[in-house]
Length: 277
Image (cartoon, rainbow, N blue to C red; front, top):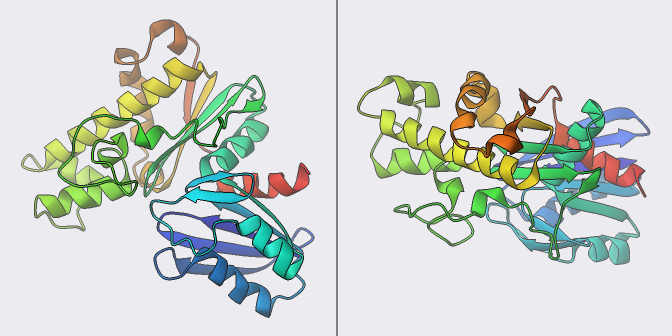
């Protein structure tokens, strides 16, 4: 059996497979339980699990969790922990790295960026067929590049991350800060004059973020995904029409911007980690 986990900033989602057959889906809030403890609860019930593949919304390197702004971490050396205690092979990679591996394979592209806007703002990059990770695994942490100060902190502890303006958590924080109904959608914010500034700040920050990725990594394709993109399909055309005002022209020439066609690219990419070994 293989246990595949999408450890996101809001939810922990698990799928259990026997060969290629899906047996069970499980779900838990990321803030409710430590990741390792949750996995242990699952494998006690499904004792035939021999491999664990994790798409992780945080920074990881060589099987070690470095940091996680939105996830409870109870074991940092998670790969070694499950190997020593349970003799289970564990593969873990940043969720956007997993996503871009899946997107690149699906689209058969060797120069591709995946920009996902969900709880946070994430980027994964494959350049000339190689996954870009950096010395300590944080090379493409787009959401945490300095942008401008916000009146509240990011999950990483800073108050000037671009993620504080262009992400699901940012929208929630800005609505709370301005005493706005938390149930208002991004589109409703845009259409309400007294609240439209939040939408405008969101759009501007997202354009800056995507144009930065295009200028730095010169991809052929930029794939958009994540919960905010999925629930706001008009964002694709807005970004495609306005990005020329922000990205370096020569880097933008010939770039295709599209919304993901995959249902859960991070999970698919996590399975690819197993299959690549």
